[in-house]
Length: 94
Image 1 (cartoon, one colour):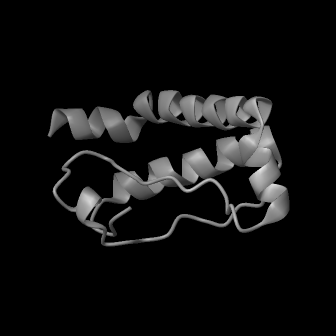
Image 2 (cartoon, rainbow, N blue to C red):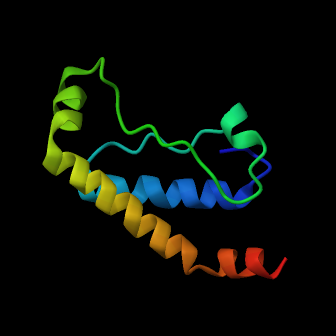
Image 3 (spheres, rainbow, N blue to C red):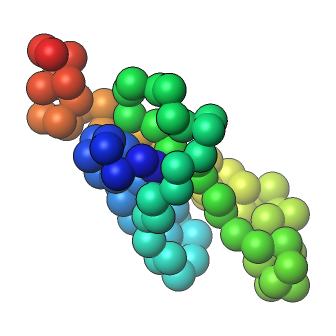
């Protein structure tokens, strides 16, 4: 996320929490990154990195369709919760 986008940090934190709750993964936190892909987006946006293929345990999990489904469910729950939040209502009023 970009530090100039407070809503992106909130969304990122929600994704981390929901995915960790579904998968049991360690929460590594939301990190600010001035990535070009996020720079010219004026709505909440983030780039999600789920794990490391260089870690054998994480690579095995990431290859599992049931683990992928848990990741997707967690992300969907976070996006739904964020879209219904007061933060989004305020953004839509601007």
